[in-house]
Structures are given as structure tokens and as C-alpha cells.
Amino acid sequence: MRCPYCGFMESKVIDSRSTEEGSVIRRRRECLKCQRRFTTYEKLETISLAVIKKDSSRQQYDRNKVLGGIIRACEKRPVSLSQMERIVDDIEAELYQSMIKEVASSDIGERVMQHLKKLDEVAYVRFASVYKRFNDINTFMEELNELIKDK
Image 1 (cartoon, helix red, strand yellow):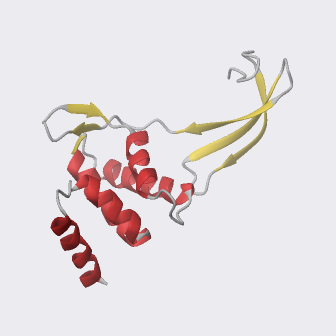
Image 2 (cartoon, one colour):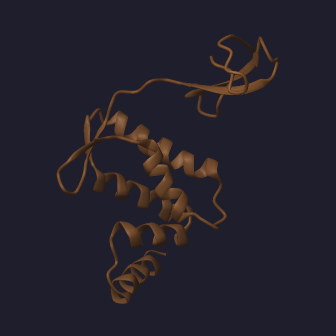
């Protein structure tokens, strides 16, 4: 592992711990040249997943795009980054367990909305307003009324 400080290629592992669900191993390392410490994460490589966009084009699944949308929806809300990452972890687990190799972007969006609806209603409405492309206040109010009715 290359040291992020001096670029030296050799380091030693000081400590290893698995994360909450055991899907990632966190390693503390020390550079053998500059003796500075840094953290690395080791994650199981998963099967590739293609996302079918609305225009029928295909893209490689990108976890960061999903997480980015959730982060924007949860901005200034009492939702921790670990909660947001757990949503993405859960969605990925659902997709990989289904053994499909291609998934519609709309399916991912619906799954995100389901998780956000349970976690934070404001974040849900923010995500839904972009995802469903609310064109006017009436469409927005219809979604809010549905949310109130579901409570």
C-alpha cells in the first residue's frame, strides 16, 4: 500500500478491525519510511452491475452517485453519514441478492425513496422532488398529501 504522505510503497499493519456488518476490514498502517500512520479499507469485490438509464443507455453502477443523491437530500437534516451509507449498503445487498446483472435507474430511485421515507420525511420529499421531477406546486402538494395520508 502506497503511503499517502511520502509515496513509499511499503507499510506495516498495526491494527485490523471489521466494520459493523463485517463486509469491510479497516486497517491502520504505518509507513516504513516516514513512520506516519494512515487508514485503509478492504472490501470484497462484488459482481459488476449495469444501470439502465431512462434513455435506455447503460452505465456501470456507481455507489458514489447513489450516496451523493442521498447526501444532497439529507443536507442540514439530522441524518448521519453512517445512516446514509447504510441505506446504500442495504440497497446494494438487495440488488446483489436478487442476482440480477442489470437494474433500471428508476428501481434504484424507488428503493432510495423507500429507505428515506422511513428515515427522514424531509429528506424523502427533497429526493422525491428531484427524482419525480415535480413540475409545479400541485404535484409537490400531491406527494405531501400522500405522505400525510400514509402516517
